[in-house]
Image 1 (cartoon, helix red, strand yellow):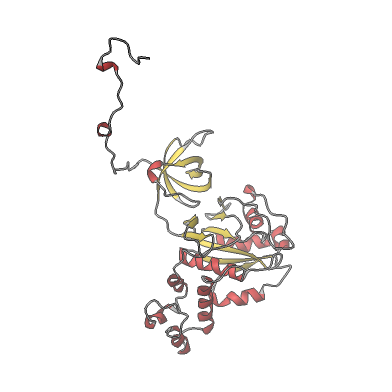
Image 2 (cartoon, rainbow, N blue to C red; image 1 turned 30 degrees about the horizontal axis):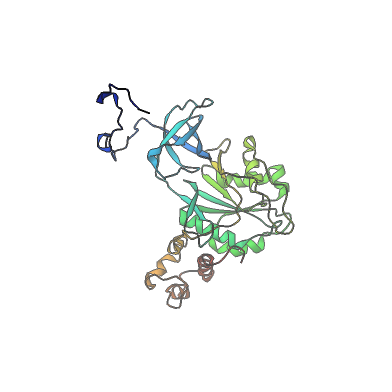
Length: 336
């Protein structure tokens, strides 16, 4: 069968343009100087909920950002429809420089790190004193991640009506980490919330903890107008609760400049991404003593200068023990 009639002309034949005829690509990207500023509140399957002034705007990442992903807490620049109306979508065209980053990996052998939260001022590590039992190794790992990411740690100990906090506080007392102890009764009558809020006002605080410790219950009490479904069951065999928070979410504290960021319950906290040499920065009383250390000193070897520094009375021996315990968590599993 003939494709064309008897009297065809070259102009009648459609040809596909060659690559040389297409517009050349450029590395120049639009500056979007008129973009609006926004804060990422949550991320769900490629859609980002952002706060732009006093409006909640749905957005997606612009293709020009490539593989760079925005996370909860990111300050971003947006263009497009920012009315906040239903079925509208803006574009995130720029992610501003981050002041802090909380990262973790699936385990210590996993080279792929995951950014959980950006630009938080502090990390609230929520731990139950019983039901489920405390996991000090997991607390240590969260502390290391906080120090490495530029966040100030805060210990929040829950369920003090089931067990006293003394033993756990003794373990972390020499780290000079601030803490708040709460009971279930105090959460119900509101007395514990006032103590927790004192540590949160004017700051962006990310809450982490393994399932069943009461983390989301605490967040619900802090931000009652934004209640999230809580866990009501802790497995009697494993001592773990069900995950009830499936995605990180930033919530504003009422009558305060502060924000809380609720994160999913942790099963593990890998530290493959953490450079152990950065942990020493959390110990300003020990850091000057490292000047005499050999190159690439792990601070837990015979030639480490910190032993002599402490022996000369420059720092408390318990502080050196705490440093080495935190550094050792990089080599341990959470269940140890």
